[in-house]
Image (cartoon, rainbow, N blue to C red):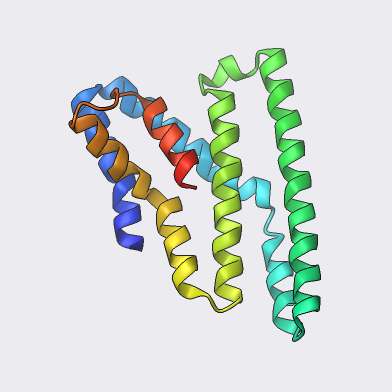
Length: 169
């Protein structure tokens, strides 16, 4: 599953190159790089503290408190990211990068949330659920988008993949 997920991102590049051209591949590559970096930045590796705390807690009540605290931290970070994205949009700084700020924000939040859920399920000894979430997050959406484009059911645009990325996360 994991290898297929990662391969999906490569498939996106090949399909965009074939169907839409080099400019679109470059646009997606910049978007992908921004999402990868910002997903790390938005999390600030707070999950390491949560993992430590979850492993120390034996009772379900204690674990739920840690999970709830992590959810509050993540929610606060998502609100802060929305405010920053709004300021970038209002000031016009987004035009400097050429990246669609709304899509970047949506994918970063969805990607980070699915990453956190995958980690949580690993810690709670639910590896199958964690692997399914991780595979969907890591690129199974690319295979789906590629099939839709090649079948003529979707337009060969980056927004096709952005929307599937958010939906699968």
